[in-house]
Length: 216
Ligand SMILES: *Cc1c(COP(=O)(O)O)cnc(C)c1O
Image 1 (cartoon, helix red, strand yellow):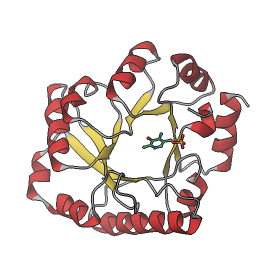
Image 2 (cartoon, rainbow, N blue to C red; image 1 turned 90 degrees about the horizontal axis):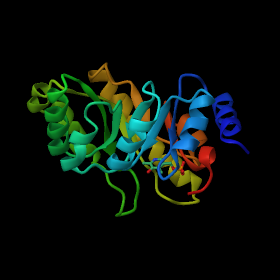
Image 3 (cartoon, protein in one colour; image 1 turned 180 degrees about the horizontal axis):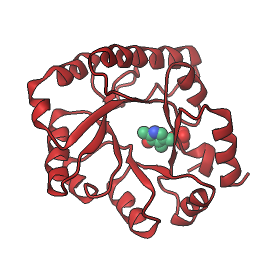
Image 4 (tube, rainbow, N blue to C red; image 1 turned 30 degrees about the vertical axis):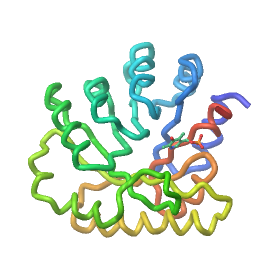
């Protein structure tokens, strides 16, 4: 199956209120160009350096999303162009993004990464810390970042009930935060293997790699 066909199959199977992020990490520029030519405009990468190199070679109307774990010292390399940063999991990182965005007179949109998986290895903030960030007075001083929602990764398991429960728990945090913070728009959950489950649980942004570009 071609990249174009894969994108078409996915977009026709989801509502147009769900944003498809094509996860192009490790894939060559030619593969991204193919997806671009099929109409895809939002791409996700998990390494800043790799994203910068691709940004420089590809059309400038691409929206680049950073979906990987962030190293604060590298935020400066993407601050002039990144469209959305998914994996923010500390206040320190938020402050660094704010500082770098200010240098470019930008407001960078961010998602806080919530920890829902059972596994130790998954990054993310406990729900209590997410609430603390939203309630902190310091957040208002960060004029160059805007938290627009949450991101999470479910456990890597074949147990779909567990995955569903994890997605539903982050969705319930999201909807409860939305009551007080009406500008929250985005819930980024769901990947190649579980995006249908995620959408049923409230996702409106899915991050799909291998189902578009093939295995890595
Ligand atoms: C790689 C990656 C994806 C895409 O995974 P697939 O299973 O290939 O769809 C989604 N989200 C994050 C954070 C990733 O690192």
